[in-house]
Image 1 (cartoon, one colour):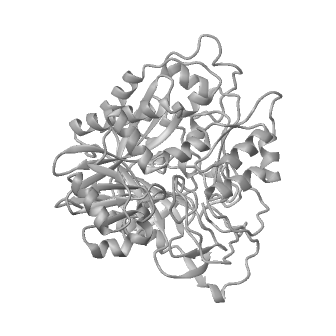
Image 2: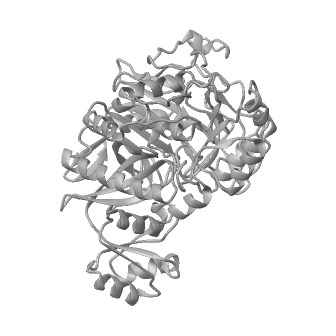
Image 3: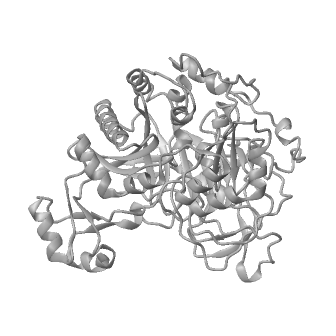
Length: 563
């Protein structure tokens, strides 16, 4: 049985908050800096920051809200009754909406759909050239323990507060979304007059428990892999509990909190128990039968009209070319063969049941579920719940369903805007299911896999790349996001670490998004395609660093990349 590790904007994985998971701290005392004059285009292009995106113009996707006129109160009156009215509401929105995080990765491109939507980030992959991304200039060195700390620092930053106050009309409260937050975040937003458009931190903390997820799923009829919830002080207690539940001798044991790559243990012998017992004893446990499974990720949104279920994605996990962590999550794929029609129907029903039960707990908005497909028995089981925006959002928001209706996150945003609406969720879910095979997208999270500590002197540029006539990956132009990719010959790379920053084993270097698949299935096992490995090698070849002892003192300390 395999499980994914959390991702930078979800739970806990060693990288900045580029997706949805927390991160292990890099080497103690490590500082980072950014060289501010690095151009975002290559030598053959114009590098003037004010004109770079004009010289390489973006092609509108037909829904771009960037230049739409505001219509104050456009959602008032009778409320919104259909998707067309929802589109118009967001296209003319006059309330500032900010996504705050280490990077804008999770919701990059949403500004095309929502007028007044922008990003406040700690790291700026465009070096000031993205018109909707703001990053404070002054970043004194400090170490952040987690994603919550980096977001709270941003909210407290005077540059950020001044930026968010620009052009703010009296009586208007900015809306703020993020992946990682806590009770301190809630207090900061309350003091500053921001609406934090997320469920309460205390509720999310409770729902983060794998034990609570399992219990709520059982109540809703969204069942997990056969399991028993118990405690175990020694090997004998574990085997007795498993035997009484009929789970067999090949077990998967999970503790309540933390990313599954580090809190999931495969135990089939006393030697396995001895190896992991220090992390297990004294905690509540979910003890499962080990199955052969296909892990599938899906995002959904709980609204007052019901739960909207997004597309199903397979996961890239544990590839040594991408991550040093065995079983660690490192990307997603969306394609027509993720699930059979029967499996998709079962999985959609499972997610809607869980969503409705979470709604009874007071949860509203976006969440992600790991669904496990038993490949031997063709059963569909609840895996884990991530009550937050996730790393899969990057693909979810560019699907055929998103363009037929609206990106999934806009259902979350709609729930927290001051507007009434009444939508036919059954119809929306059916349409998204009908369009499930309409597109193919993939993403890879590229981590440093070598045991090195270096200061970077050269890095790939953020933007659009293509495979030329010789098969080489070539930088084509600056780009705001990946929405303009046409086919498998193109890719978008979002740089995370730039020149002057440091890389170490496990650090996130960047994210690559492309059309087409990056995995192939062979005999029940998955492996990276030749194209995927070529893309990884091509991006890695563009990083050049010098060992820590030889590196010059950074020009400007910027803090540890720890979200």
